[in-house]
Structure formats: structure tokens, C-alpha cells
Length: 164
Image (cartoon, helix red, strand yellow):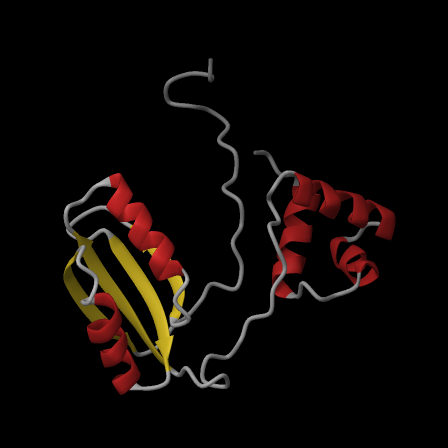
């Protein structure tokens, strides 16, 4: 997917504040409001902008303890992986779930009220599942998110020639 300077400016401005008015967004990007509206609509239609959401402070909602939990599934079949993924994604403690390669099949990001809640999640929820062969838990001391994700710039030349 290719992005011009206006697309990039709009994406940056929206990632900084998705609640700003279209008029403010247009001013930040240096274009008219109608141009801004049209380009943002096009970015949504292309699937670049998937949603707008509020970022919640986990401590303020009673879930200040975060952990990353690696889970290995046995036997490692597509059905087992899919079933576990669907089950785990619905758990209220889960705020992120990654299907991974390597020694573990999943990396689950959870947020819980306290260490007792973390222990209960691992012991009472995860290890009770028959397909869970191994669990490794790392407590998160601090979670720093990147404030913005820029598209990868297009390459001018390709090592193996132009695409066919």
C-alpha cells in the first residue's frame, strides 16, 4: 500500500488525537476540511484505519497488575490452537493475545487486580485446560507503548528487480 505525505500527516494527527474535529485535523494537515474528510474516508475504506477507541488506564479500572504468559499447547494441532485461541480471547483478564512460533504457541497479555488474581488466572483457568502443556508467567513492571505507527516507506529499488 502506498501513502503520500497527506496520508502520513493525517495518520499521525489521528494517532495523536482521534477525537479531534475534522476541521482541526484538516488544519493540522494543512488541507481543507473536505479534503481531510475524503482522505480519512479513503484510509478507512482501504482498511488502514480500522477503528477509533479509548485507551483505558488499567489501574483506574481495578486491573493494575499486568503479566505476559507463554502457553504451550499439546498436541499442537490446528483445532487445538484455534479452540484455545477462541476460549482465551473471551476471558475478561486477557487484553492481548498472540499466536506465536517457537517453544510456546501463545503469548497472553493479562491485566488483573493483584498477584492473587494472577495466580488464580494461571492455576484455576489456564492449567485446568487439558491441552495446556506448559505455562510461563512474567510480571510486567512497566508497559510503554509507541504513540504512533508510521507506514513503511516504499523502496525505490528492489534487490531482485521490479515485481512481476
